[in-house]
Structures are given as C-alpha cells and as structure tokens.
Amino acid sequence: MTRTPDLVVLGGGSGGYACAFRAAQLGLSVTLVEKDKIGGTCLHRGCIPTKALVHSAEVADTVRDGHRYGVRGTFDGIDTDQVHQYKDSVVTKLYKGLQGLVTHHGIEVVAGHGRYVGNRTVDVDGEMITGRSVVVATGSYAHTLPGLDIGGRIVTSDQALTRKEVPERVAILGGGVIGVEFASVWSSFGSQVTIIEALPRLVAAEDEWTSKQLTRAFRKRGITTMTSTKFVEATEIGETVSITLDSGEKIETDLLMVAVGRGPRTADSGLAEAGVELDRGFVAVDEHLRTNHDGVYAVGDIVPGLQLAHRGFQQGLFVAEHIAGLDPTRGDESTIPRVTYTNPEIASVGLTEAAAREKYREVSTIVYDLAGNGKSQILGASGGIKVIRAGAGSAGGPVVGVHMVGARVSELISEAQLIVAWGAHPQEVAQLVHAHPTQAEALGEAHLALAGQPLHTHG
Image (cartoon, rainbow, N blue to C red; front, side):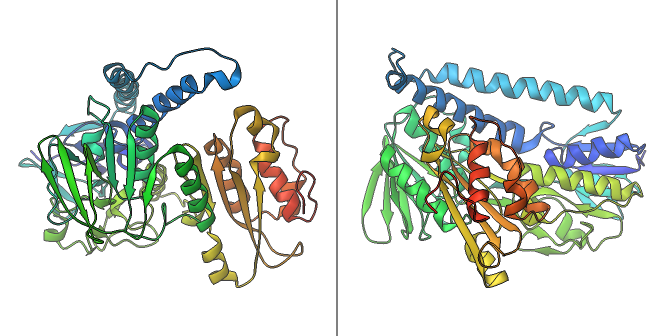
C-alpha cells in the first residue's frame, strides 16, 4: 500500500525537521523519511557536539589561566572519557526533545534509506511514499581529497568527534571554519597544532581583517599556520602520519584531520536518475526553492550557498509555508549570520570590505578595538569590531557589513544582523543605548565612530 501524505520530507536534519514541524502546524499531513536519527549532522556530528567540545576547551583555558584572576587552581589535563560523556549527554537530551516534538506534531517517521524516483514519490527500501509535495533535505558529508584514504590516524571531523585520546601533535588539512574550530579545541586540550591551508589566509570567506586577527591570536596561542601551502600526500607509518607538502617539506604528526569542506549528499538520493537538475552535486532551485520537478523542493546544504544549520532551518520554514499556500518572504542570504567558535570567536554578517567595494565602489569602515571596552578588559578579551557602510564619510549610506573577533562576540551577532538586514545607518544605531558594562557597548561605539561621533576611540 502506498502512503499518500500531503508532504514527504526526505531527510531529518535541521532543514528537514523544521519544514516538517511547520507544515504540521499549518495542518498538512507529513511523512518524514530518515535513515539515521532526527536532528541530522548538526545535532549528532556537527554543531552541537563540536560546540560541547568548544565549551570543554574554554573550561580548560579558564582553569589554566585562573591565576590571572586571583583564583588558585591546577590544570591536570583532559579526561577524554568525561569530555565525551558530557558531550554525548547534551546531544542525547536534545535528541529526546526532538523525538517528543515529532510526536507532538503528529508526524509520521519512516526509518530507512529514501530515494526520490520521480512523480513526487520517494522509495524507502522498496516502500513507495507519494506526496502532494516532496522536500529533499539530505544534507552534506565531509569532503576528502583524491588519494587520501580516511582511516586510522587520518580522520575527518566525524571521526575526530569520537576519538578518546588527546594527540600530542595534530595536523589539520584546511583552514576553514571546521579546521580552525578543531585547531582551537585541540590547542586548548594541550596538543601542538599545525594548520595547512592552500589559500593565502585562514577563514578565507571572511573579511581579510578577520583573518589577520585570527592568525595573530593563533600565533600567540602557539598554533602554527601554513597558508599558501598545498598537500601532496600522507602516509600512516606506525603511530605517526607523514605529510608531504608541495614545497617538498615533510611533517610528522600523530593525527591528521582532513577539513577541506563539505559536499552535498545527493549521490545516492535518486535525484540525478529521476531527472532533477543538479550542478556539481548541488540541487538547482528557483527563488521559492523549487526544483525543475513540479512539487519538489530542496533545502539546506544541498542548495548552493552557505552550509549553515540555521540557513537550512529557515529554508525549511519558508518552504513549508509556501507549500501550505501562504506568501512567505525569503530573506536576503547576505544577512544570514556566520559564527566560527574558535578562541577568539569570529562572528560576521553582511558583506566583507572587498565585496562591499565591488558593489558600492565607495565604502567607509571603522575598527573598534576591544581594548577600549570595559567588559572585554574584565574578561581579558582582545579583538575588535569592524563596521562597513556604503558610501564615503559620515554622510554615507547604511551599514552593509559587521565583522567581530573576540571572546563571546557570537552573542552580539543578532543585533548586528538586525542592523544590516534593516539597512540601518550608523547615526541611527548610535542613538541606541547599550547597557554598561557589556561587550555590546563595543558595537555601539563602533557605530558612534562611523557616524562621526567617536567617544572612546581616537578618531
């Protein structure tokens, strides 16, 4: 017997379950197909477990540096079993919560490997499910490189999350978000870390100022950064990995983590065979996230653009409302906030300075150093906030980009997003009152300076 719900969602990650929940709220019958666990990569192998490790790393740094704040303590090392127990407990609690929400919304879950076979039909291990609409949300996988076999002491982030020991030496292939986050964690845990990046700078998608700030901070922490450096080969020999670089140099390490990005998980989804248009594995969609098949949509990491859980989540809500006959507005993706959970943190929204200059020709920028912020001094935090506005001088246009580096700046990104998304001018933001002492004051000070009203800056 073929199931015929209003909506079939293929994939239960952030984008898929958000779409399913919202569609159910709007009165649609929903079948959610997932071969693993609801929550997907983000909950089980990505955002949540990695940020639990980040918090353990923060605690390690706090204990190690406690004497700076008059607190006596001894850092005796990392109990990896306890770290993983803590990490897994967080994931388990959130997973149970999601399972409860699935039941609450009356969503039917079909466990198994689903493949789209055309005509709004998904084949789940031989069982056919046909919906009035289908949303494909199959997520992404960890990329590797040709000739580089994953296994043993050569791992991706998936395997790195479950390793029980802290290696003395770690080499990370890739200086993007995943690479620098793990570099930061392992450094806090006591490893000697080397990052190998083919591009000229770390986190190359971020503003160049941000890259320089992070590189400087990593240097102070003893993390080695090798940019404009290409990997040639890696060989596991006993308990070490020998890495050959394009310069001919060889590096010996105890663990090599491959962090060269993530690819769209569409190869075994049936999409290509059914005639759904793909571009290098990504699903081609229109402004409503519709594919070239009537009634079939795609959301999340398989759609070209930022591979972020909150992007997929928002796309899932948008598609559910569109299918239900509402008229939702799809936001400008340049206003999606981006956060990298290193020490120090990186948070940004909007355009980089280079992109802003390409779009507007003339731009104005200001960098507010966190050294002038009271709360940052209390926290012992360094870094800064860079604000970019369209046009020259204090008579220019709206803010089009905000870039922040420093402890806890991820907590400031929501206000920065509102500023950029609503096209606020620095003079307007300067009128807002920020509580004292908070790091949010630094965001206000940066806008005061860009509005030509600097107070705690020499401008």
